[in-house]
Image 1 (tube, helix red, strand yellow):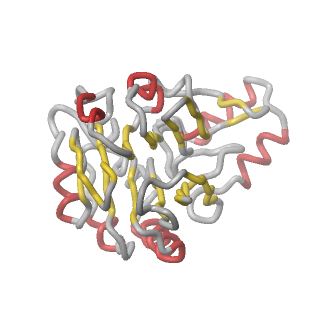
Image 2 (cartoon, rainbow, N blue to C red):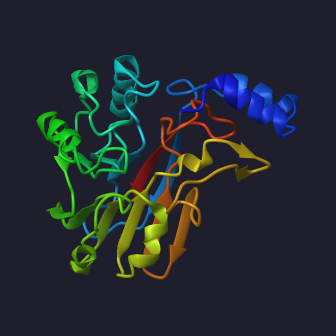
Length: 259
């Protein structure tokens, strides 16, 4: 992992001036800097007025512990959503102990989760998923779940496992939790809302552009993208992947309002 001292030297070496360093000092991590971004979604039948929260890239264990988990629960309960959708990288490593997270997690509504690349590897692929299930979360891992008139589709990280794209042939409106946003190009079925994270918005944005982006997160780094019959929403997430720093890219939760 890149330390703050090392990253400061990189910034200075790159000629980044005082304004960026000032932003580094004050662009604080979750929860104080967290922003809730509202996105309006055309409602499928029976969903008008419903609200969902999309939360991704918690990276529990990397500067995110029990106190932050309690703060996240409090934020969710204030929003009072009908459901919570978690888009991967709940844990920072596939062997992370999530006891502290689930001791605090009580959102007051159903939670659905699909794993990201930090949640999975070949040797410990089921550890995070088992903890999530034990903590009361519905795990969608290459799974479709009909729920209140829509299909919730959970696809695992494309960097770790093969995705069952035939799941997207389900009829009707589909909400897809697929961790890497660039995979949207492969999700060609209509009536589809793809919720992604993975990029952290770049975590560091200078002049409105991300400094560095991960594989499968370089084409659609942040925000909302549309094509006929399909929408992609990419969240900046709330945690840290590598460098423990955010510049001009605060932690973010997406509020989905169906109208």
